[in-house]
Length: 475
Image (cartoon, rainbow, N blue to C red):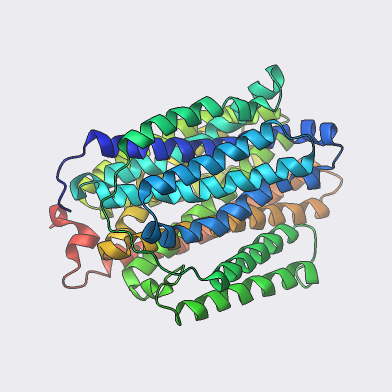
């Protein structure tokens, strides 16, 4: 990296792309509280309203894998303007939507914008931030979209109550103008652009993979596993993935370069990142249900219970990155994983009698662990690749992140749903038992995570790789 100083322009570029990423997640989580309102206004049921979130996540999951190709083929500023135009157009469509179908179209357009903008932020950090500041800035990049889910439900509730649901979109428009002003004056191009052909077959395979996965996981809570709704969806998903991997071996510039996974150290980082995202999304699904259905609190109260932990915990992410810059990845990642494991053990043990205060406290402990380890796994994983492969490596990590998010939410939802059928006469008892099995599942996954992390940082000290695994300051 020739650049030694973190310039104001680089900071501005991260801020402008970060604003776009933040707003994408903010709108997604804020709209969760509008389901009853939208159901009444457009005369559709809850299952139909849910497509407003599902279709957005599906578009996001399909567009994000394209980030490596887009990085090679277009300038950073061009990608930023594309992302901003798509997202803003989607916001305007939804603000004026006369019907639910038009609302869905707006969500599709927004997903395209966020899908381009979110990887762009990390690619700018990887390309233009000095190595000595990489951990800190990757921590900042991770923190920006991580804060949005904590603010989203509260923001959405207040806006819907006082102004109406359309203002969730209207209030974002001035923020987009601010991002535009900052972005066009700060985003620079450091790498050479090389136009390459686009492989539509790979795009189709990605679409089949994610459509099958999301439908399969979503249907697990409503159908038996050995049904066409579940098995058929997973067959479609596996077929899409197999086609994508096979295609990537036959073309020169694949959309997702799976050959990077032959780097065993990078591959281990990707698996650990996947598990951590799955556990995070699974826990985020359990807690609001427990607060509302067991403790009898409102949706607004459930948002306030997790809000302090989510905000304060996310602020530890830049600190975790700073520790990586100073001491190497081993110490903050191991510490974070130990803290996460402790919080999951306590959630499991105390599941029968958790007050809202205890939930908030344990969730804060959990988010501290996430702050020290989540972004650092991504940062150190990408360090294992040559600089020219990092954009493709970032595309793989973020694709796995989207898949893990869908899997974590749906698997835990299915676990709780199955318990509700067994305790149909006592909903609170059903949720407690379902939550306990959910906690046990997440804890078991994280035991696997601890084993992989131990292998990564204790038993994987290969000659010539010491800097990337443990950093010079550990020597």
